[in-house]
Amino acid sequence: MNDIIDIVARLRERSEDGSKSDRRLAQLILDDIDFASKAAIADLAARAEVSEPTVTRFCRGLGCEGTRDFKFKLAQALAVGALYLNPVPLNRDAREERTLQAICDGAVSAIEKLKPTLDIGAIAELSAKITESPHVLIYGSGGISSMMAVELQNRLFRFRINAVSHIDGQMQRMTSAVADKSTLVIGFSVSGYARSVVDAVMVARQYGAHTAAVTAQPSALAEAAHIVVPFQTYEDSHIYKPTSSRYALLAIVDIIATMVAENMGPRVIEGMRRIKQSLNTLKVDDPRLPLGD
Image 1 (cartoon, helix red, strand yellow):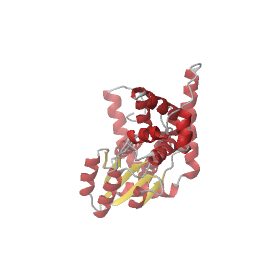
Image 2 (tube, rainbow, N blue to C red):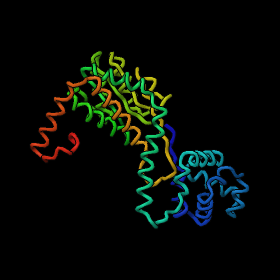
Image 3 (spheres, rainbow, N blue to C red):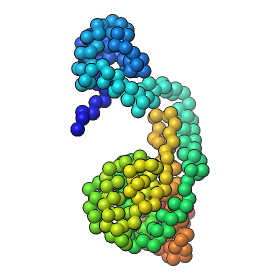
Image 4 (cartoon, one colour):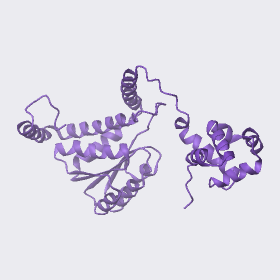
């Protein structure tokens, strides 16, 4: 396995703890990573007022093979995390209004962008399969995907569907190994490359389970599933707030749950009535409260 080098973190350490020339060179690079990733070694040395061998030693001291490898890692860091390298300073005036606007607008925008791209046919196919399946396993790893796996279970048990979610990779692997033709396995992954989810779906499919995925397309998870509900994230430049993609993915979960309930028809009502009755009797007698939420 190759060493994974966070070149920006190492530069920041060197800018604080290195020698005088290393501190100057590291800070110069951090101040203009785009320039440093493209500049010739002579130009970098001249701007930092050091010798070319000093630049080469500096790059190797960071764990790079040389200046070429160093510049490659800089370009990679810039491509992946440019938004986080030079964030726009916060204007703290009217912070509450700005935050409210950013969160609400982000949620609305995420759902609006989802609507024209949604494969409602795939969702209808998945909902029909959930309706007829005796056993549903739901997998998700990471932040958003794990939440959606648990949320889909939360929606389905109300219809008295035998649905269980797993967000632990080992449990995903073990439960998929005992799946069979009566099992429906649903995997959530925003990237489509969450290894534990991809592996579990492939294992379950090997044993005859029907498989589905809500994920990016193309991706490893999409290739592993019989039914694919494509999901594409769209992010803005506001790096301080949580991702708005959660709202779009939650909308997909709600659409699936609604279609399943409509497929099942009136037979879902009795279970929902019992939940409402139980909670209102034992907890808070307020019929305005949502069902179990």
